[in-house]
Length: 75
Image (cartoon, rainbow, N blue to C red; front, side):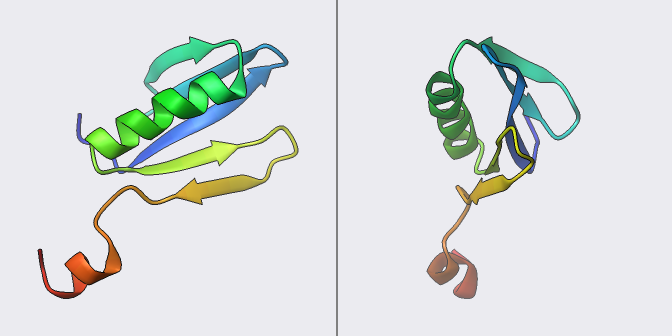
């Protein structure tokens, strides 16, 4: 999977979806916590960024890629 970002989005009160940038859905979950756990694992595995969208439209980003030190020294 070559994606730069994994999104966690609320579809309805009891339906949270984890999806790629391309729109491909990776799973539906009944709670935000469950969707975040899966989203974090996928983002870490694929060195992607995790974006969590809440129902008010705010977005929280969690970087899972290389840290600043590794980027600075090309590691």
